[in-house]
Amino acid sequence: MQDLFLIHGWGMNAAVWAPLLGPLSGRFRLHLAELPGHGRQPYADQQDPSQWACALLEQAPQRAIWLGWSLGGQLALQAAMQAPQRLQRLLLTASTPLFVRAGDWPSAMPEGTLGQFAQALEQDYLGTLGRFLALQVRGSAQAKAVLRQLREGLSQRPAADPRALAAGLALLRGADLRPALTALNCPLHFCFGERDSLIPIALADDLAALCPAARVRRIAGAGHAPFLSHPDDWLDWVWEACP
Image (cartoon, rainbow, N blue to C red; front, side, top):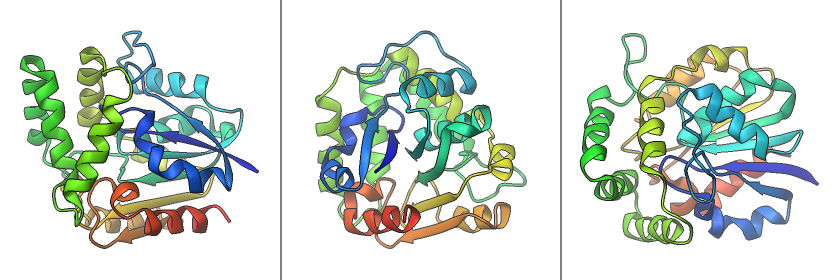
């Protein structure tokens, strides 16, 4: 049985994977990561992507399939750059090596969107986190159900450290891991929701052009959390990526 290392996204914790643990545990030995300052993981003032990746490597098996959602996927890419021997395969769901728009990366999120969240976070971090959850489900065919699941996941573990939330937003705004993507030496699989309001689906084509060897799956009707809104389709993607 293979080891599967699951990494949640910004502001969340490992409980977000709860609805998937049953089917996944039938095929994998599961290891649930938590980002610095999220859930039960302490925050040690990590500011750099390499420091966040080191925190994940400390939690991970010596060699595993890494599956990252959103910011968790970006940090999995960083870990692959730092310790390529530790990753057997890399599965990224609703994630990208560069979250914000650039001149040569036109399909991504406007930088101002995350900038507004960063400013609001300083004034009302709980309210800002709630608005970010709502943004994650916007456009999804099952928005209300997914929002409820995300909130339930948050409630099951300690609230994220506001300092870690600020640092995580800074990573989303500033980290460009496209060089790591093109240098990757393990199988790479992407999964996107076609209604994702944070990662425009057009970005899937940009990724395919940047890394032709990568396999890209699009899930119709899904938003930023396809594993919650469309679990059967998402699990099909995992089974196909890990034969």
